[in-house]
Length: 222
Image (cartoon, rainbow, N blue to C red):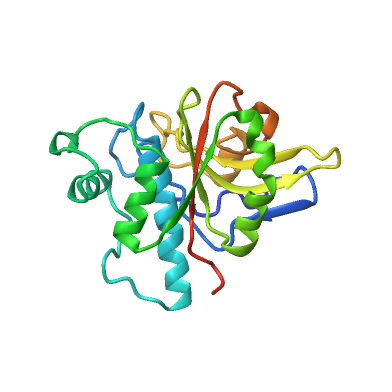
């Protein structure tokens, strides 16, 4: 199925105090390339979404990247992690998960984009990092990878917004979508209706899970 871009556009915002991704990205999700990675590939798909943003941003700036032109496949991601010594050769062809640390290493190796890693000890502590996340979107504009332990499902973060009650929400891009049998396409509107892209209050993140955020340090505007 064809990849959809910028699927957050048109989604109602919970408030006016907002900072969001700048530029374009493609939505990578389970099975989007015909390879069934349900149950283990969410971190890879979020990484691919981040890679698509880097590639499109560099294209828009007229920059070249001689190392990687295409967004890497799941196999290419595994090969990268083996090449740099992070994973053993048995990792190739496995269904092992990857998290924010592996994503940071891949972005550095494949695109020469350094990343800031932010460890948050509990979902309750996300509130302490609201300003840092806002500043990231205002100064860099790149999407963020979010991983965790008890809440182990990878997520993309595309924005942050404060409402009138001073409750903050993260714009979450969920890579766990898989097209239904018998269908060959979907739409941004349908993905929004089914909450594959949605604003989540910080209060909905697990108190018994830590979260690791990977913030690519490439600016959309400079």
